[in-house]
Structures are given as structure tokens and as C-alpha cells.
Image (cartoon, rainbow, N blue to C red; front, side, top):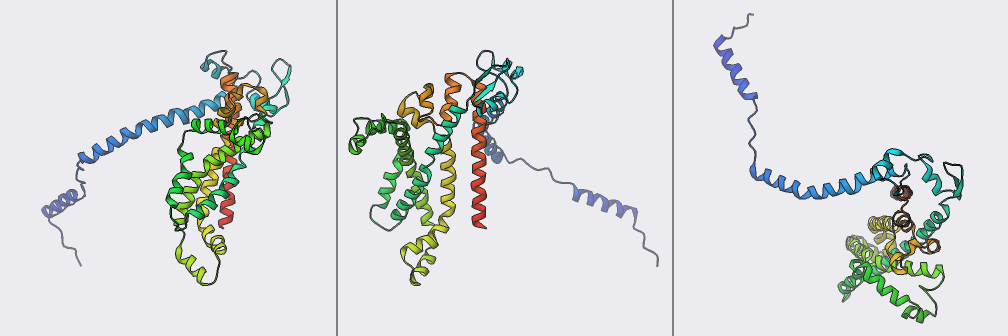
Length: 338
């Protein structure tokens, strides 16, 4: 059977129609959308620029600086290009050594004494995290009940979180001074006492100041607990403690985990509180081993002694410690949810 031939004119017309059909129409620019996008990029450009310069570029330069020997005796860029005559990893070895040999063969005192004591001080201040979480959960459970004035108490507990750390420190200095109310009440010397009483003073301050934020978040988490589950458990005869432990707490765990992680990251970077309570402790060698936290010793070497490369190396170690321990917390959280 022979196929019927298509006239040339019809074939040409069909090809032209197909070409027109597949040719995309030129997309018109919506001026309103374009203007909105441009204004959006304009406003976020400041944040992007600041983040790029003060976080990403600064981090790269800090890592680079930790492998050279810059102590303010030359320009910054010359130090970056010169390297470290003691070896690229000299400051990292110096940090963890009691004694270390320098480039000319002399044995010098390493940085482990100040580094180790400041790290232990920081770990001591982290005790406030579980204590604060226990108190926050208690207060959040009480404030989540339908009682008169609960909203007022939430505001009162949150005030220290938004208050200036300088004003709070002045208040703390007056309360815990040798002739202060707390020292007279407990019959002991807090700020003027031994290093353990001084660290306890800082611990009480950080725990009290961070209490409000955790309480507010946990109160919000309490309001998200499924009420039908609690009612069903109550009908089955469960008491208030069983309902809280078996029903409320598991549903509240994401909020608790968030508070723990953020509190840990902030606690590892504590610096302002001991510095403001006890004065310029980072310039005093004895105070290093008393109350100064890890960030305080970094500040002391950077701003006081101008050992910029060593301070940068300690900053990198602090970042690695925070990163690893935060990853451990996430791993434990995944194991618990599995």
C-alpha cells in the first residue's frame, strides 16, 4: 500500500507552525518583583559582608596566624609570609608542654600550666548547666500550671537574661563583697576568699543569669505537650509525677536538648563575668590559675603579652573542643531517639 504524498506547501506550513510553537516567548521582567529583590539583597548585603569579613576571613587568617610567629615585632602580613622559625606546629606543642625547646636549643617553660588551669576553670563553670537546667525545669513546670500571676513570674525570671552584664556584675560585687549582704549572711568571704569561693561566686552568677532564658523556652515547650495524652494517663490513675516523667518530659526533650547545647557552647566561651567581678585578672599570673577561664587566657596573651600567634592557636583549640563535644552531644541524642 503506497503512502499518500504530502504537498510541499502543506509541509512548509506545518514546519513553520511547529517552529512557532517551540519558540519560547520572551519573559517579561516584573519591575515590582525586581525592585523587591534588589532591596532585599541591599539590606542583607551588610550582614553578608560583615559575616564574610569578621567570621570567614578572620577565621582563615587566625588559622594561618597560628602556624607563624607573630608577636607584634613586625607587620602582620610580613609575619604571615615569614612562617615560624620554631616549626609550624610550635605553638600547639607549646600549649600542651611543661617545657619545650625553641629554635636556638634553649629549653623554655611551656604553656601547659596556664592552659590547663584555665581549662579546668572553664569545666568548673560548666557545672552551672545541669544545675540551671534542673532549676529551669522545676520553675517551668510550676509556671505552666494555670495559676494566677504565672505570666508576671515569667517576666521576673527573664529580666536577668536581657539585663546588662555590667550592671549585673556591679550588683554581684556589692552582694558578695567582704561587707556585702551574702558574705554577712553566710559568714564567709566570697570575692575576697580563696579561689574556690571566687569560682563559686562566678558560678552562681552565670547560673542565675542564664536561668530566665531556659525557663522561658521550657515554658513554651510545656505548652506544646499533648494534653490528651496527659488526660488519658490521669484517667488511668497516673499521678502528677508519673505524667510529668512519662509524658511531658519525652515531648519536652527537643527543647531541653537545645538548651543544653546552646548553654554548653556559651559556657565554654565564658570570659566577661570573672573579668568584670575580679578586675583585670588576665594580666595577673596568679589569677590565671584562680578564676580565669579559657577565653580569658586567650585575651591575656593576645591583648596583654601580644603573643598573637599563640592566642590564635588557643582559639583554634577551643573551637575544636567545642565542635567535638557538641558532635558528641548530637550523637548521644540520636542514640536516645533511636
